[in-house]
Amino acid sequence: SAVISQKPSRDICQRGTSLTIQCQVDSQVTMMFWYRQQPGQSLTLIATANQGSEATYESGFVIDKFPISRPNLTFSTLTVSNMSPEDSSIYLCSAFGGGSGNTIYFGEGSWLTVV
Amino acid sequence: AQSVTQPDIHITVSEGASLELRCNYSYGATPYLFWYVQSPGQGLQLLLKYFSGDTLVQGIKGFEAEFKRSQSSFNLRKPSVHWSDAAEYFCAVGGPKAAGNKLTFGGGTRVLVKP
Image (cartoon, rainbow over all chains, first blue to last red; front, side, top):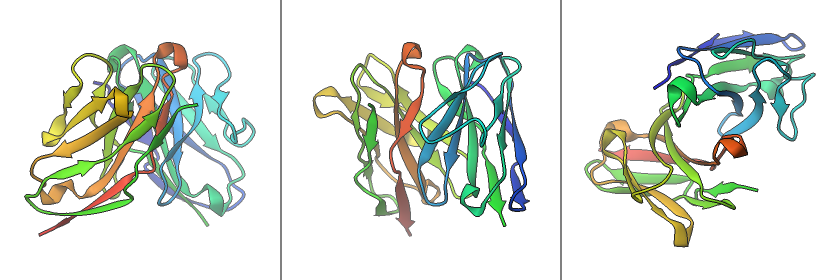
C-alpha cells in the first residue's frame, strides 16, 4: 500500500489569499490526482497531476484558480488561488500505480476554511 | 460518462444488526469499483475494491461487497455492525489505466449506529 501525507492538514485562510497544499507519497506512483470535497458533499475530481507537464483539469476547474505541480513521481502541490468562502472544502490528494499497486489511495485531506 | 448513485442518503441501524449499502453505477466498460469510508474529521479509507474475478469481494473491518453486472450494482454489506462503523460511506467507479484511473464518486451514505 501507499502512504500519502498532506500538508497542511487544516488551515484558516483570509479571503483573497492563496494557499499551496503539498502531497507526498512514500513510494513512486504512476498517477496522482486532486479532489475537492465541499461541506456535506461527495468528492469531485479537480485534475490529474502529470509528472513533468501541465495538469489535466476536469470541467469546471481551471489552471489559474488551481495551479498544480508534479515535479517527480512522489510529490505534487495544489494551490488554491485568490480564495473566497466558496473554496472552503477538504482537498484530497490520491495516488495510483507503482507502489500503490492497482489501488487508488487517498491522503487524509487538507481542511481549508476561508474567512 | 461514468456515474454512481447511492440511493440512501442516511441509514440508521442498531448495533449488532446487519447493514447493506446500495450502489448503482453506470460505466461503458468493465468497471473498477471501490468502497471508501470516511469517519468524522478523517480522510478516506479504502474498504475494498473489485477489478475482476470473484464477484464477492472481502474487505477490511468485516465488510464485503458483491458485484452484479446484470444489475449494475456493487452493494456493501456487513453482518453485524459495531458502533465504530458510524461514518460516511462512498462508492466509486473508475476505469483502467487507459481511461485515466479517474474515480467518480457517489453522493455518499451516512450510517448512524444506535446502541
